[in-house]
Length: 271
Image (cartoon, rainbow, N blue to C red):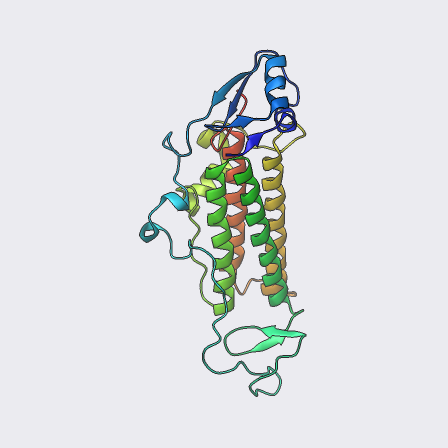
């Protein structure tokens, strides 16, 4: 169980008011200076209910594996080296000693590392790494439900790359119990879905909300990199519209987690 420090309380509250209520994770402990801060401002500490006990959407870890989408699973090494060696795209001969400037494009070909498709994979690797970093930060704040949803998004990043590598359709995204249609509805009409307006994180917001907002910006950048790779000029018509759609829905999923957090449904909050 992480210990909440005075600095973390001040960062969360910003402008303390005597007697204000502060909701913290169930079982949270406080550092000595945090306890002094609570006493000084006569804060009322309210413990939040354990994750998903209020009927909230279950995370991937709480759903039996047989009931999850096939892509929602832990990471594994992505490349299978069995079968014939990939060939050179120029001469068509098997490549036994791969040059440093080339990588595996698919099961049968190598390609230079700086072509648009490989740049896209690199960007997706960065997005997945950021998702996992934020999940680690969420766990440090004892936001287990949020971390579980981020684990699902990391798995979906791997699904996108796998579908691109194997030249197959990307599977639909499911997050926090919402399919793509419900996700689109909730993120377009948050007042109706969650009782809060569209949000723009500001200086009074929690660090985690800013991390999520940054993640959403990176996903939107990944969508542009995908368009560079799969919708080049002069036509700009995507050859892989499923990849572009998947990234658009991934951006919506991150925004939905922002909305859930802002609405106080994923961890401690101030009424």
